[in-house]
Image (cartoon, rainbow, N blue to C red; front, side, top):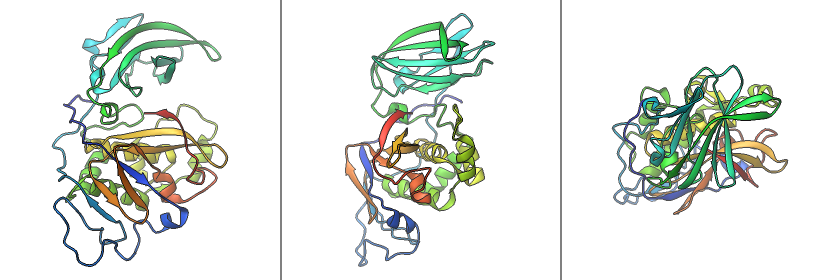
Amino acid sequence: MAHLRRHSAPVAAALALLLCATALAGCGSGGDGGGGGGTPAAPGASEPAAEGDGGTTAGPAFTVPGSVALSAFHGDFAETGNGCSIDVSAVADGYVGASAKSDSRLKFQVSKGEASYNYDLPSDGTPIVAPLNMGSGSYSFRVMQNTSGNNYVELFATTADVSLASEQAPFLVPNMFVNYDESSAVVAKARELAQGAANQGDVVRSIYQWVVANISYDHDKAAELASVTGYVPDPDATLAAGTGICFDYASLGAAMLRSLGIPCQLITGYVAPDDIYHAWNMVYIDGEWVSVEISIQPNSWTRVDLTFAASGASSTIGDGTGYTDRYTY
C-alpha cells in the first residue's frame, strides 16, 4: 500500500441504527419518501433518495476527497532484529507495521496496558499494517514465533509512546482487515456512490443502501469458515462476488467509508440470542441522517450492522440485539 497524506478527521456525529427485521426488509425499496410536502431543503441538506424512504440528511457540504488516506510499511524506517522489522514511523496516523521471515508460524502482538491484539504475520516477509486501536499512550510491539501448539517465543520487540493525531486516526486508513489503496475497485465504487452527496449523511445513506441491495449473504461460505481461524476479508473480492459473510460486509463498508474520509471501525464480537460471533461497523459522521429506520445522534460512535440489514435475522448473524464488542480494527 502506498503512503499518501492523511485527511483531517471530520467533526464527529454518530450514525445510529434503530433497526428491526420488518424495517430492514424495506430498506432501499419503495416507500412514501419521507421528509414530505415539497419543503425546500436547507443548505447542506438532502431529501430522501427517489427509490425509497431513505429519510433526510443535513450537515456541512461534502466534497469527495481528491486522494485516499493510506497506510504503508516503511521498511527504511523500521527497527530490525533477528530477521524481524517493526515500523513505528507512522504511529501518529494510527497504525504500526511489521514483517518477518521464519520457518515457523508467526504472530505480531500489539499491546497497551493489559490489552493485547495478536495478528497472524506472514512468515515469508510480507508486511502487515495493524491499527493502534487502543488510543494514545505507551504501546509495546512483539514478533512472536510458534514453538509448539499454542506456545510462542519472542523474536523481536520494541515500544513506542503514541500520540494520535485524532481519536479517529486509526479508523481513517487501511489495515490488514480493511485493505484498499488508490487503485482499489471499492474506492472507485465509493466515489461513484458519493457523487452529488450534499453531506456525509448522504454518503453513508448511499453506501448503506447500495451494500444492502447488492451484496448477498453467503451461507455456504459461512458454513465453510465456521471452524476456521485467521480468515482475512478482501473488500475488492467481496465487491466483485456480490456476496460475503459478516466480516466481508464490515470490511467492505469500512473500506468505502474510510476512503471518503469518514471514520469507520470494524468490530467483531458476539450477538444475541446465542452469543453468535459476528462483525459490524461503528461510524462517525459530520451531519445528520434521520428516517424511520435511521437516526443520528451527535458525538458518539454508533453501530451499523450491514449484514443484518441485508439478510435479516438468521442463525449466523443473530437477531440484531444484544451486541458485545470484543475486538476493534
